[in-house]
Length: 298
Image (cartoon, rainbow, N blue to C red; front, side):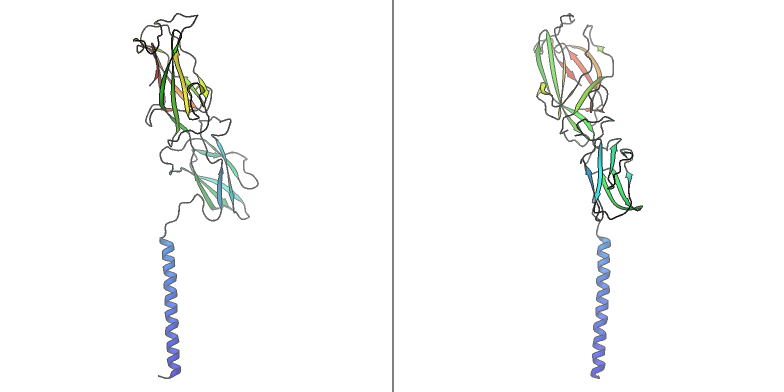
């Protein structure tokens, strides 16, 4: 073969192989990119959305005066290029809303709670906020709305009182994701039924109580509520039957009972998030029972 023809043929083959290899690598690259699962980030692209405070709470319309259970949070973003930015609630509009006229010149905005997220797994964020630039989505953000949910009985302490008794009942409070409430909170009780007398008696019922954690009278923590149930000597009354202490043989004779609620988020009776009792499927009310020598909840 002519040397010139041989060189031409050699270069042609090498160039053809290079083109085929380049096409194959390009095709392989697209296949890998298309088949790789997308990561589940709170934000997409280079724009990062932030929430402050980190937790949004629903107290059934009540406001925590110390803002440790915040019912409003501010959403802001960084790394955004110049443009006109808008926010949109893509999921969870039954749980959050935008605070009117709350968007600042930096584009940040306030959202407020209007309901609570479903309980269960912390992985299931059911509120999605989308950030748009010039009308097109550029980032998104998932979050939850926490709420006080249940109270779990911890202990009963029966104390002697002159001519009667006092039972201190301690509960631990949890949110819907089974986390203990970390910060002090207001709580209250309310009666939702009249007194039911189990035996003839002239015992009276006190007004519903309220307070703040930690409950110093029963050595509680920020997460613990304390309830006092009892009856003892009153100079203006002669109680029938006579109250006794828990050590008395007749202390477990039931005298009366009634139904009521516990709520967290307010000291005003009947306001705040209603608590369930003892377990996830429990009723949202308790039965207050007064025995001759002890007090109990059910």
